[in-house]
Length: 254
Image 1 (cartoon, rainbow, N blue to C red):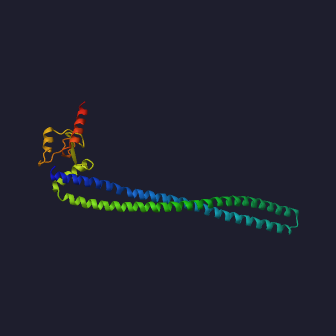
Image 2 (cartoon, rainbow, N blue to C red):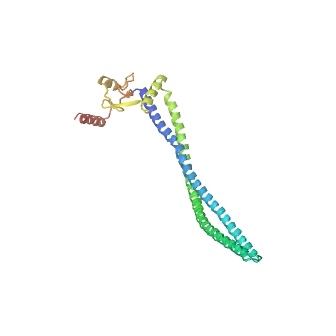
Image 3 (cartoon, rainbow, N blue to C red):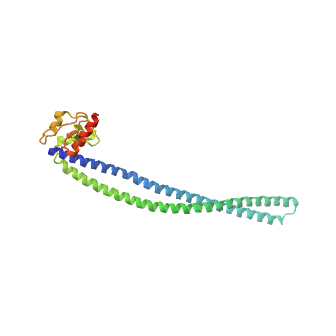
């Protein structure tokens, strides 16, 4: 194989590795976002539990105040009852006392409900706080692992970019442009090996005269697959590989 083809194959190998590294780098923002989303969801759950607990506490204080206010009214009405001089006035105050005592019962029932709810929300807050701490600790470790992996991948990218810069120095600019156009068209694969007198990339048969030229070590020109336009190269197979190719060809004819 002539030197320029070796350089193109080396470039293709570097470009393939570069593509894989860049694809890995592209996954890190999403991975970090997913980690942050888990922590955010845990924080939101904790905030909601605290808000519900706080609302219940406020309602509890309001109902406690209601109870005290109605009790004050009962006391006031009973004190007034000792001062009235008519049965009508006394009955009216007794009615006010009964109404106030009924309101006290209602307020105490509401207060009891809020006390039960407050205990439930208190347990929910503690559970949410525990979960948040666990998620926070877990995500901290996962985030550190992702950041370390990202840093290593960025270093790998820098090394590959430097390697590519070294490789392309030996390739003429017009040929490099030609290679890149073919690679862009075929998912990064611009150079294909000929196996069994066919293009290994697309399977197109190579004309006999072209195949014979490719087999020569001193071939000066580059040849392309007539179907996919990739640059072709040929490596003489070992005896074992040749036998396998022959058997495959024979099976294909059968």
